[in-house]
Amino acid sequence: MWRRVASLSSLISSSNSSFHGQVPAACRLTIWESLTTGIAQQAKGVSKEKTPFITFVLGGPGSGKGTQCIKIVETFGFTHLSAGDLLRQEIASNSADGAMILNTIKEGRIVPSEVTVKLIQKEMESNDNHKFLIDGFPRSEENRIAFERIIGAEPNIVLFFDCPEEEMVKRVLNRNQGRVDDNIDTVRKRLKVFEALNLPVINYYSQRGKLYTINAVGTVDEIFEQVLPVFTASEDQEVSAKELRKSSWGKANRS
Ligand code: UDP
Ligand code: MG
Image (cartoon, rainbow, N blue to C red):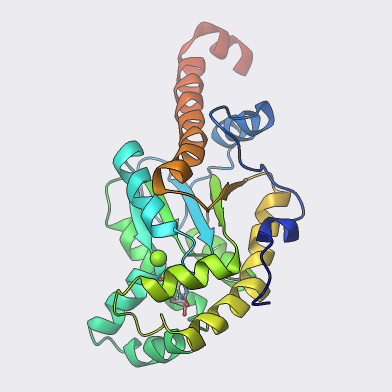
């Protein structure tokens, strides 16, 4: 496992693989469909005037999820919810679950789904924005199913930052953020958990045509170049869908 240099994308069954500058027609169609056929369904667990637009941001430890989320927020006005940060805030606030969360994170395991989903739900409910980047979640099929059950929504887009393992290890051990889990033993465990539990989630979204795989090796700007068209296309399609609804053609064809 440690010597594997090949990117994880070989383990993913099919994918809207990375693209450069132009979103392929198939991807554009997927995004258009998600905006017009109700996949962006009403979220029962989040009371909002507008239907939430949800992006899940997935990838192994150190694959650059958080860094790219900052750029997506700046450019496209999403609200960034990092599941790991929400869990670390729970530890810091000495909440009832704090000690359990700390032990789980130290061991590189996954916190019970209900705990994480409730934290995400609270943030979604208290935020006026309807566009959310959910970073580092869902980490397992159980996480995914709990989100769908409690929030009552599916993501519109799933980004997967695909990075070779030795690059992820190097980044995590060099990042010096004082995290209890950024040590070689815990990183090994996190990578095992990622491969066993998170890759099935990535495969699931690939099969549903929602996955956008980004090659996570390169400079921050080079990687963002691949991320940009995913959201530019979704913005274009959001505008087109609105125009279509307003136009007489749209009205005539809806009846
Ligand atoms: N974690 C979890 N559920 C989540 C997100 C994070 O249990 O939905 C825990 C898990 O133990 C993980 C740790 O928090 O290893 C750190 O997660 P984060 O996303 O901050 O870091 P990453 O491993 O992606 O670098
Ligand atoms: Mg992170």
